[in-house]
Each structure stands twice: as structure tokens, then as C-alpha cells.
Length: 323
Image (cartoon, rainbow, N blue to C red; front, side, top):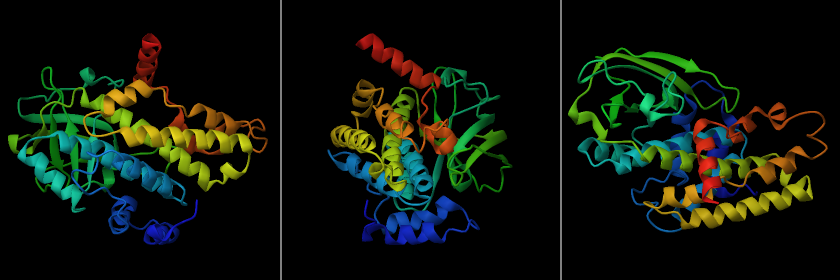
């Protein structure tokens, strides 16, 4: 892919990155400058707008270090922004405005120790109105100004905004290191006796929204795979890779064009499992790669495309039943 003038400032940022400051926070001003951050509140209400976002993710992923940046952007838009758009509270609306203007970065805390991908296993606050709990994996955690914290209270899963710079709160932070996308920071966060207020409520029930969000994340990983394949020049390495890549891009474009707010879950659930395997197989089978190595041996980032968690296994079982 030709590196168009549209991403000149982002390309310059990535090429000059030295690691002294926070990666995602530093990059966001360039995402806004090049109009790659979907800052319009209504940007996914019209057909074709989500496709534009996916093409931006693909474009970023085709740059050196761009896959890390695409992942950071994808998480904030598909997760935090979706939660804020669904929320009807004053806090949700104000937070969405801050995100849309680039004045605040939001990360989302769902995962907890031993939760096994099931919201029902989340821990409730120890006392009414007081939160003592741990989130084990918060993507963009160290970049965030605020965490959208998913709780379990009774049969519901409300989401509260927790500002990370509150002087009255002591946060226990721990960096979580994973073997892929090293510039994306992940955090384990513990709160002790944190006082929840109704003013910080963002969403009354995360519930079924979690399925839609996870589907959005998986679908966006298709775009990251397309861009990463371009960056490595694999598209020109082998005719079978070129065919599989173009087939997957055409599929992504068709599905993404049809996606609008309110219809994401139905369409994406119907399309799962997403057809990434032919491209991964074509890359694996080239002589340069298949000499006794797996794709993950060649590049740990391919771990992102091994979808064998409880949620994706559930979706695959459901797809088999429906077929």
C-alpha cells in the first residue's frame, strides 16, 4: 500500500518513536490531525462509516509500529466509545464529549482473576456503594485518564467511570506483559474501598453489550491482519497469499459497509467464524515461513489471531447449531 500524504504526521511519529513518553497518548494528537480518530458522535450511524474506520485500522497496521497504534485505537473506539454511546447518564454524555474531542482517554476494565470470560463470575462490591476489586487486564490502562469499570451488582453489570488522577484514591497498578504488540500497554489494577457515586454511573447494564463489543474487536482484528500482511510484503510474496488476502479484504469491505449502530451484533454473530484461516494458512505454507516454524514462532503478533477463548468457542458452537 502506498503511504499516502494522509498519514504523513503519523508516519513521522512512528518513525521517530523512542519510548520516552506514553505511546498512545502521544500518538492521539496525530490521529486527530489526520482525521483517523472517529470523533463524530454519529460516525457509525450511516452505512459505510464503519468501513472507513476499518480501512484506517488497516492503513495504520501497514506502517512500522502501526499495528500497535491500530490496536490501541481499536480498543478505545470499539469498547470505551461504544459503552459511552450506549449510556444515557449525564456522566456518559460528558465522557463521550471528552473522548470525541480528544481531551480524555478512556480504557475499560472487564477481566478479573478467575472470571473465565463469564460476566457472572465478576465480583460485587464488598459493601454497598464501595468497591474493593481487581481488574486483571486493562488494555490502554496506563494511557487512560479514566477507567470504565464493569461491576456485578445483583443480576446487572453497571459501568462506572473511575478517574485515574483522583488525589483521594490510591491505585495499585501493575504492568501486564504479553508477547505481542509491546507498545500497547496493559494494566492490572486494584482498588480498595473506592466510593462509588451515582454521578459516576455510565451505563446501567453492560450485559449483552459485551458480546457485541467482543465481536467488534474480533472483526477489527481482520483489518489489522490485512494491514500487517501488507507491511511484511507477503501480498507480493506468493500468489496464494495474494488471492487469500484479496478475498478476505473483499469480505471485510462488504460486511463492514453494512454495519451501522444497532445492527452490529446480529450481523457479526451471523458471519462468525470470520474467514481469516485461508490467509493465515497461505502465509504459513510459504517456503520462507514453513521451515519447521509456526506463524507465532515467526512473529508473536500472530497470537492475536488464535481465537480459542471461551467466548469464541461459544460462538463457533452456536454457528454449528444454526447451520
